[in-house]
Length: 355
Length: 189
Image (cartoon, rainbow over all chains, first blue to last red; front, side, top):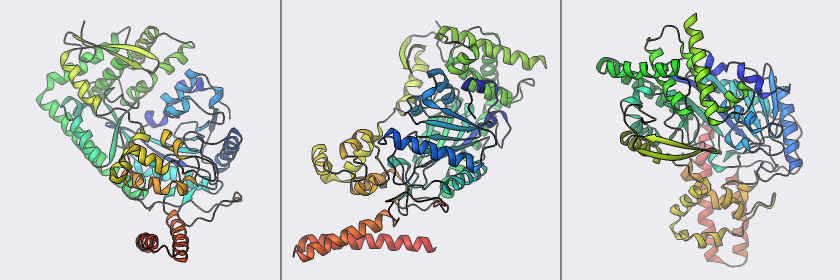
């Protein structure tokens, strides 16, 4: 079914709006698999005819797999920049898809918990998302989807190198599993650099929520595996899972340490942030994310009975530029966006208070 | 003006940042600026192609010179899709699944450095029920194909009485066989 991207802005993201295990610290879990058609040039080297054939076969396979309840399809070349940016802000497409080739396409389930990018870096990038920290259920979902597709699509596979991908860094399982963590406690106690270092040594990557270079925004961190070859999917997930469990334990410890030993500092931090969010009339993206982070921490510590954690989660997505512009129905300058952003946050928090 | 990050201290440092197509100015206090610089520097975006290439140079000290490696590999191209070494060097990517055969020697050490192992131990694709595209080779795994190729070269070398070359090939074959044995073992386990 064809959908206009702006229809998405009012539909809640199931993987952020619903409850999940450990969702006080883990916002969401995501696993993506990279797959390609055998004996077919990768998108970087393919001519339009070959890529259109891939597109059509992939779409057919996805439809016939019956894996999505209510699939939405988007042809990327038909979308304008703000619409593409919106899909990026909702984690449905990658940055690479902002400059799509002529056969680039996205299919996503209505609740956005399952999606397939066609003709990105690889012919197929499929992903599953769920709220909270739940790697194994997410793996089951994406694994089933992958099995269903592999009955219809002849995958490029080598017994020794595994699934063949355009970039050798994805060889083998083609799997990138990641957990999005909110770590204000570790950040405030100055331990983030140490966590990054330790995690890096264990072969995992730490990235900001909003991509490369956004590490300091909102204290949101994505922890994911780097290596995709040499270990089975289960081994990779087991390792990621045990490290994320450790980080969650440390975050909890830091929060209770701050609460017990630096209470006024903590209350001041959260209170100031709430003041800005509740009463500001202009707020930049960075300030919004950092204040929302403090609010989320306050909500988790029971300082706000009227705001719940999922409202804050959704604001993390909704305050982004394209969401604001499509909501306003027009392009906005940076200054106008700061005003719209402050309004959206004020109204959202006010509505919660009124209940 | 107050610092954009802590909103408490006076901003003394002003940094211009380009985010997407927008130019932004950040006003920071000394303390926050130092913190930001420390945290950001470890996460600079890297050009994957360069990283790949540097890793494979490090691991093969005899190929340390860029030009030497370039010369050695520059003639390689994939006969299926035409992707050549220059394209790989520029993008860090391959052109089609068969490229892995053509570029295997070039890539081998980089793959080893990038991943925790060199042999896939994860899932295999489920049973495919459609028609196989024409000319798709029966899959034996890149190592077994490599082995066949080396054995052919060995036969030729022996026939031409190039014994030094044959000895090198024989060692490579034995090495590969060991690797394959290990793999079969892992399959049965």
